[in-house]
Length: 340
Image (cartoon, rainbow, N blue to C red):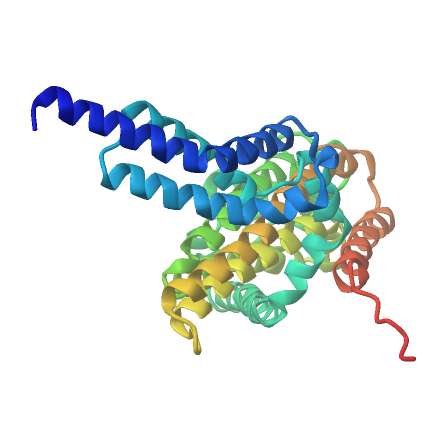
């Protein structure tokens, strides 16, 4: 067979191949185009049901075209249509606004409830960390300087007078008060929240150690104020943004622990499948943690300076804690249908 005859035969095969299957490609492209333009409502039920079948048929056609080295232009067309179809068959079909609505109306709270065991573990670790910091400094005040950065503890140090410590809690919140320390706490806690989640893949051990270290700092500072009878005032000062901020760290740490625990103990699933499932759930929780940190930043930046009494601070902090608890415990639960 001459070269010219071979080329003619190849073109004939390509044309015949196209004629036999082109109607399905055109139908699939029409469906895909309408969905891409947001006109899904104009599709008939038959078109919607046919989409997966047409997509699989397209993949089969693409495989045959590649195997038989058919027309390059035809292969490019099939590859492009296959890529567009893939995102519609397997991709997310929800707009940003609809996703946010679904997230806040129950998606976030359900993800949090799904890792409740890890939340209890993280809560125990955080309480233990604060206790460790308090006990270490109570036994040897030199531990305070090892736990708390020196630039944020010039006034708030072991041995400081009640008057000096009280002055940092009330009145003008300038550099001599707790303003800079509060800013440091927020920045530090935001980093801890992100790292506690990111390091969870290492069987959650770094996440747990990070939570302990972070809370030990807070426990050390609590001891300083407790020695002068200012425990309640210090907790009140911290509660305005702390109930939201520490709650965010709790969830971030729990998300990291959830990933690490799933990798270490995958059960009947493969390690890859367990990590994938846990990662998706934890990522949803972390999206909400970012929202909580933003709220904590606003509270730290405004409410803390505006409210200069312990009762008011507890009121704001307590209200925020109650709000979060009500949302996570009761919001987004599926209603059981009454039995008939």
